[in-house]
Image: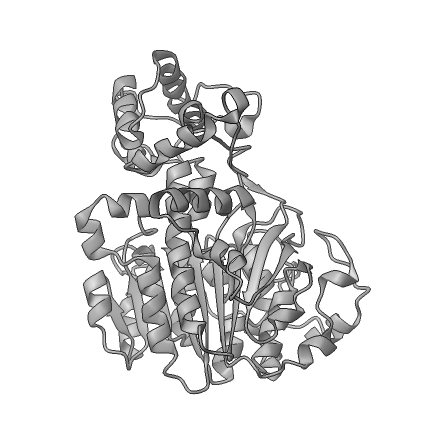
Length: 493
Ligand SMILES: [Zn+2]
């Protein structure tokens, strides 16, 4: 699909919009404290040479908590996110954010990232397009036009909802072939993640070879961790390390071949900073821990928690980068809650919970790995008739190092056959049923397999971050970024 730029225009400039605070918003609360007043933002204009946006996708408060509990037990220290709050030497600002989209108090990742990427609330499923087809200029284009370097790093397909919410315009997030094509036209400096299937001639529906298009534009193309480390620093860079999403961290850690071929999120983040910081005029970089969300959808406690810890390692890379600088605005947040997991109280005086939770240390694989052992995909209604109950049980018991009962095994088998019935239909998926069984051993339970309306945690440091109110609206971050970086005039063109 070609660029939709000329469909733009509702006649209201972004600044007019900010000034007329009475304009209603569809999906959430209307309140003056939630936006950041323009005068406050103007004070910081241009003070942030660089902007780094760190987003753990679908991170409920329980996910942040449980990752910290696991890391303290395993490594004797808190996560870097909690270290930020705990360490008296670190300066930061913190609040809660209302992530509602235009058409729902429960957002999807496309509308969520677009609220930061263009400054408007839009309908779920769209990417930087208003309900009437208005095409909003994205923050990566704004920074690019201001002469700054631009980068996207993720563990999902690079064409997935969150990175595209900073950089692309499509009516439906599933149009990932089109998103890849827009990337090829928009001259961003660095793209690292999964998603070969949207670039390769062999895998795209239309047979176009987008790698060739990028190559002709002077990009270095890398497909493995080794190639990433060998790539020269001068050129633009496109790195795709899997056909679809990158593997979960827990599977990556258990497989030497994957470790050789796929870089970690923190390695990709370090590479991005090394390259983007060469631009004297600065850069914008988005880093996404994208599969925390997938683990939550699947109610896969270990898949989710170890990906949150891997995301946290990338947070440390950025903390180190900003250690002695005052020219970089960093935003650390999530785009919505998901399945709201938590460690529940168990046993007399709740004293069983820590011991149960510790079983997660022994887990070897994600639910996704379990499914792969017998050819199931989460989008399937049921398993193949040839798959036996025992096959499933063995894969699950190996992955989790947990012995379950015959009755539990039978419930799980029914779920894979599409015959399990739960009071709440949002908890009938095999993943949710496996999680329910495992909760008897690890103590962790989930409320659903979907996103939630929870207000989300946001922390920030660097120029302008002190203006974030304790309760902030998602779209205010767009204004914070463009004002702090002094690039507002590129936002309208
Ligand atoms: Zn999601």
